Structure formats: structure tokens, C-alpha cells
Length: 421
Image 1 (cartoon, rainbow, N blue to C red):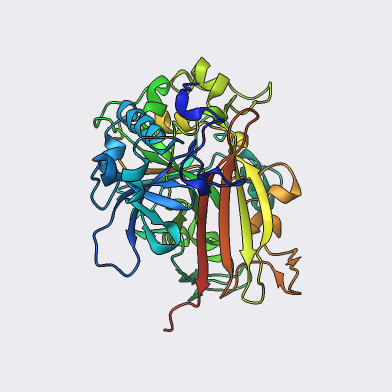
Image 2 (cartoon, one colour; image 1 turned 90 degrees about the horizontal axis):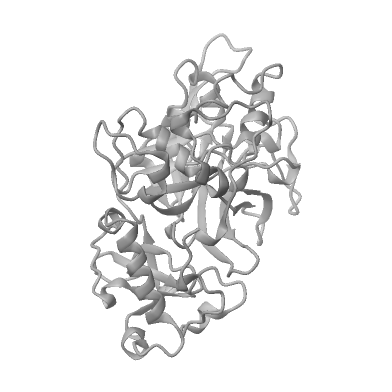
């Protein structure tokens, strides 16, 4: 772990809301985002979340423009330097308080935008409990395919349809074919689902043809966001063989607006997933002793659902990224192992995060056994899959004894009816 003064749990900020119990953005967090004030004709710009406020990065001479891609490209050393400067400027008794207080914007008065321009998006399948659960539904006698424990499975997603939290999600149309039907029909999806995931934003890239060694991989990651990979399960069932996900996934992916940097996540590192004795050892390009010792992260992710009849959302699941079969470093090492070049702002997603218990299942496909076991809500409603008007709310946090608890904000989306034909 690379800990420094910014991780000190005793630090307090002169921004009082950052010191409140349960605050997601204490001074130990300092995530970056892009914002503009509501109702103002002003250009989007970079800011840092501190309590219930946003500090304009221009106050420290950092002018990002409408995306954080340049900051991501600056590299971990430059990002650590900026983090230290922000931490010192925002601490209690800082000599910069009076000057910087004029550059604070309350979050409730801000519009939060996509933090980076995403050129490419890869979605992996690292949650072994999710992979096993889905495999049991689709292939009861052979839940995990032979390659799962050898290679980080992934597919190339659609960067153009990634949206920021709060963006409504239009129910997609697609080809649907019930098992007993002679031919497919083109209609709105009836089995709309969410997937609880994390996304990792690439920092400095690599040249085309030059892989990133696993030992260097985390130096190429800027930070993490919450990610909901919306899925039309009925479209997916008909189209995904033989080449995998396509239109069932590409209609929308929601991410949270704040990038929690890898430096902020340092205190929450943990050992990589403990593989069974009979599992294969990763091939040399995917194995690093340090990564096995502390390449995991104790990031908890929750999914909540609020229907149009509910005032308060219901929590459906809580899982942890520490149950990911592959580490972040292994994902980047594999992504670039064939010479593929990552670029600043590229998005690498974890795949659905589920745990071993019934209350940790990260998709409705698992939770309802592909719709066979609908669940009841406090409103008296039942759900097998998402209905129009439902709002899905993903939340995340990191907690570890001896360190401050930090959060990610939210990744939310409300389902709109499909477009009329």
C-alpha cells in the first residue's frame, strides 16, 4: 500500500459538511468530477467533491476543460501531487480557507456530467458467484465454462451509450423469441435487468503493440466509478450465441459522476480472491506476487429499487469487489496482452458483482431465477424484472478499521417506456 498524509483518519476539513458522520466525501476521499452550475450559461469544468460542496479545480490553477481526460493522462505521480495539494488546502486551519471558500459550489446547485470522454469500453465477467449463478440457470450441468478460471472473460461494449447518473433509461426494443415460438418478433424488452458493477477509468495509456506488465498495471488506472450495465435479457437470450452480448447491452450503461482515485482507494486494498486448491495458477503474464497479496479492493456495492408507488427505495443486494475472481491489474494486463492500446478515459468494467449469499445477488436474473421467483416489495407490488417508472439506485462505499469511510455517490436511472413504433 502507498499511504501518505492524505489518508490520515484524524484529518478534518474547514468545509463542515465533510466532517459529518456518514459523509461520503470526507477529506480522505477527494474524488474528481465535471460540473456546471444549474441555470447558468457556463462551460463544464473540473471539480472535487468535499462534503456537500464542490471545489472548482480552477481555484488551484487546474483548468480541465469539459472532461478529465487530461488529468487522467497526467499519471499517478501528478495526481498524487494534486491530491496532496487539495488535502492541505481543505484541512482545518488552512491558510487558503478564505480564498478557496469563494470557489465552492453546493452540490444541490450543480449539474454533474460525464467525467471523461470515453473512447472505448470493455466489460469483463470477474464476479465468480455471478458467473456460477448464471451458468446454473443456463447450463445446470456445466455452470462455468472451462476457460473461466484461465482467462479474464470480457467483451467490447459501446462507449457512445454510456450516460451519467440521473439520465432516464428508455426501454429498448429488440428481437425476442420465446422458446416455443416459431420465429422472433421485434418488440419492447419484457425482461429488463440491471447489473451491479464497478468501472475503472484508464489513466496513462500504452503504445499500440506494447502490453502493460501486470506489475505496472495499477499505475495506468485513474480511478473507479459505480457502473450499472443495463441488460435486456430476452434480447440477449436470442442474440448472444455465437458471438456474445450486442444490442441487449448497448442501449445504455450508467456510471456515477465522481471518480474515486486509486490513491483514495489505497487503504482498502486486500488480498486477491482466494482460489481453490484445484484451480489453475494464472499464466505468468497474469500473475504477480504483490498483486496476489494486495491487489483486491474492499469496495461494497449496493443496489436499491424504488417503484412509482414507493417513497423510499428498497435495498435488493449488497456485494463486495473483494469477491472478484480477477484483480484490476489482471484485467488491464489481459486487455493489453495482445498489444491493444488503452487511452486516457477508457472504461474497463468489472462485470456483475454478486456474493455467495441470497442478499448479495447483483442482478434480477439471479435474484428471481430468470423471472421464475418474483419478489415482493413493501408497496405490495412484485417484481421479476424492471417495469416502466422503476428507479434503480446503485451505491458504493469503502470501510476499513483504522481509516475513514468513503463513498462513491450514486448511479441512478429511471425506466421510461419504449418509443412507440
